[in-house]
Amino acid sequence: MWKSLCSLFKKDCRMMVSGKFFLMSLGFLVLYTLYVNFGYIKFMDASLYNVYLYDPAGTQTTVSTLVQQVSSKEALDAVLLDDTNGVGIDASAGKPQLVFYEGTENADRHRADYALSLLQPSGHYSAEVIGSNTPEQKARKEITCELLFFEIAAVGFLGIAAVLFKEKSMGVIRVHAILPLRKHLFILSKLAVFLLSDLVFAILLTVLNVGVLDTASILPGVLLQTAFLSLIMALTGLICALLLKDFRQFTLAYLLIAIFAATPVFLAANTAVKLDWIYVHPFYHIYMGLKNAYFGTSSNSLAYYLGCLAAIVVLFACVQRVFLREMGKEG
Image 1 (cartoon, one colour):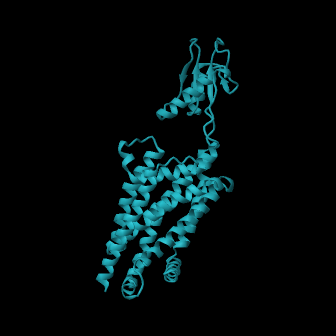
Image 2 (image 1 turned 30 degrees about the vertical axis):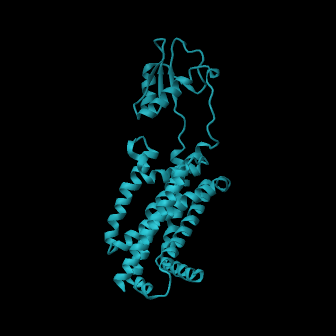
Image 3 (image 1 turned 60 degrees about the vertical axis):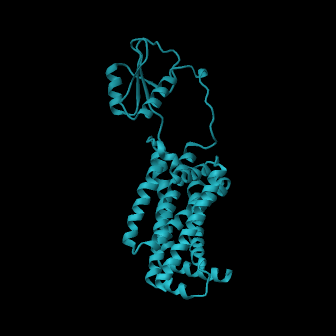
């Protein structure tokens, strides 16, 4: 059995090499790394908001050195026109009044709180340290998690379909129908190749974008969550590829996965969009499991792990049944 599985594994590896799957994965790895290090991190490296104060009577006596004084209301308006992210404080009437250009609700609230905090004695404030990640580390882990989820859920889903459709056109299923091999070995070899590929990709992506030291502490949890997602997506891709006639039909299934599986998850987990039903979305829990693993705060329940294992078992049984049916058609 093991000899036959190894033989099929090598055959699948050669098929993926000839299909440029590994080359495509390497290209995405380079692209993601360049994006994280030279695009996303620089974009997220935002400076503090500038705060400008007009206080002709000197009513504010405990002003931080970070506040820039202006000489008139006209000067305050002019400086805010040039710095639309800045916050102005007009204290000419005695009570500070905030002046700034409107943005998003959350950003405006942060700007207002930050500006007012610079007018108060520092002793009145104490900050609670939450976690040990710097802002850059937090940004790196968040974007790496998102890219890894996208790579496996979307790119990997397409990859396994491309390989299987190529094998179907070559008559591989017809050959397996007459070979004296256990039929589930065909499925296991495919899963082994894609699982190993996804795990290696996860390691390289995390090391290159999060760093070696941080990766060492979070890698076991990341690989476990990657394995769950990889097996679920590989089995789903196999079912779709076996049931559908050609790759053109498969693209419709891919769009459904991208629109209804990935998009709501990203919106609910990373934006201000709140979806009340997202907690019944299975991919949301898998994504949050992966994200928690990157931050070392895994709080997944036993029900989550049992649910993932049950999904893998059910999908494997479905793939095996569909594969046997396809072999019957070919034979």
